[in-house]
Image: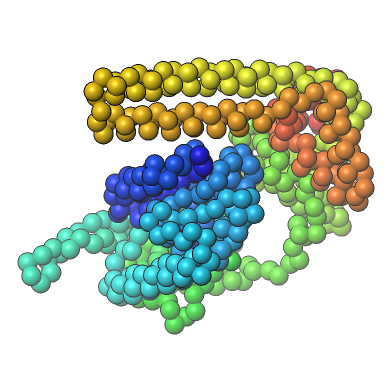
Length: 521
């Protein structure tokens, strides 16, 4: 019997959840008729197929391509569930084929016919483009009437729903803008302080201390202040189509500006959060502040980016650079992003070179100096995992025995005259359940036990591979290969390895305050 995964999707929150049930019914019926067992189902709700940036779709592709789940087929009910973008459809189908997995739509079967697949892909993309153009046309009609067309209004404005009568005795709902007085105060503070040459840090401090918050209820940061002050809607100018908008796609920037002819601007159509004249003066002041400086961050390789985490607030630690007191040399460091942007974390920054050197030294000591000890620890860890796997196999085998007993009872019932469609349906369901359990056992048996010798061989192989690279590449290789996370607290630096152990309580124990202070700024 062949195995499969199934993927279901609908694109709009206005669509009913029953759409998923209908897709499931079609795929499950096809699998039942073709003797195929579904191992796992993935569901994306209110996700467009014009992009592959869909949560469950990405999970599915990752599990299939990495070998976490091994099946013969990837199924949907129709081709447009998988993709409405020819590029994505071709790329992902190719990747699946490379793993020996065939994609097909049960209601639009192609049976591997490439020409037929290409026709379906072109048809799906053409439908999506035409629908998009029609939606855009209708949106521009509403925009010319200054209606709210979705999204979060800018600071200082709220939306309120109203109902109007239209010809034919019908009514139509729409949303209009009104002033939010509390937020209006915050916007005017921003504008006034900007005109007084106050910097973003000072404006942030004042706003946050007075309890003002962004539209999302968060503390103000530099970017949020800049976005508010640059938004023409706070000056009463209704705008539509400033950016490309929509969900971010490959090669598409949702901050990218549209050409001028595509933008709708209607001055005086909205309530003014700040006076128009003041807003114009603010724009001039912001333009004067622009400075063209080289991006020094691009010249520096921050090796711990994506790995270093603040142990105080849980935020990411990012690269930071500043001139020394004599303004002759750049100093590079890592700093908690929440401390840098909103000043809401008190975890102090740490210098870049010393902490990177420390992490590399810890990795080398852990894996290349204490190889035997590390291998023994990991062997115990894998023994625990292996024991759990064996228990899962035993549990699945017991369930198979119970399923077989139920099947035997149904066959016995048929022999006594209960020969009806419902009985055969239950037998088929039990047989499918047994098939799924057998596949699960097969996958679990593929998880081999890592012995001490095997772990040592793995470590030494990576040591050899790392030593054959340049100094920077060597450091990056070790960090990516062995480190899952580096947690920085005011008192300690903890490395968590991919093998689910850390360096806390290791040969040196916790890091001493003297060591940490030596590499702080």
